[in-house]
Image 1 (cartoon, one colour):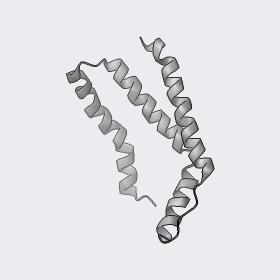
Image 2 (cartoon, rainbow, N blue to C red):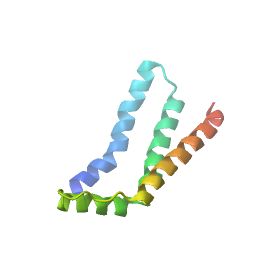
Image 3 (spheres, one colour):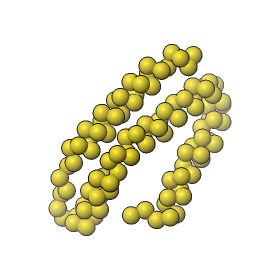
Image 4 (spheres, rainbow, N blue to C red):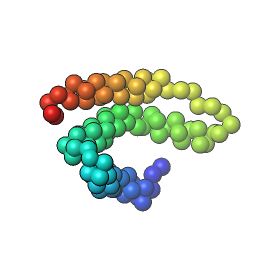
Length: 101
């Protein structure tokens, strides 16, 4: 299971991404508002995708690490949840795009 050090790194990752993303977008000539929109949508999408199934996925990973010689059966609910929420979030991001401009 995650250690306190890995939890801190996970919390710091979005901030570090933001610090490097804005100067890179400015250098390449991208709009700051569009860049932040995509970055924010991506972060929220990962939370929506992973939060409801995190315990199942963590249990499957732990079981696979315990018994590397056996293949853990695929959890179809988690797979469909991840694919479905990715599709819905991407469609929502595209639908809200005209309001950004």
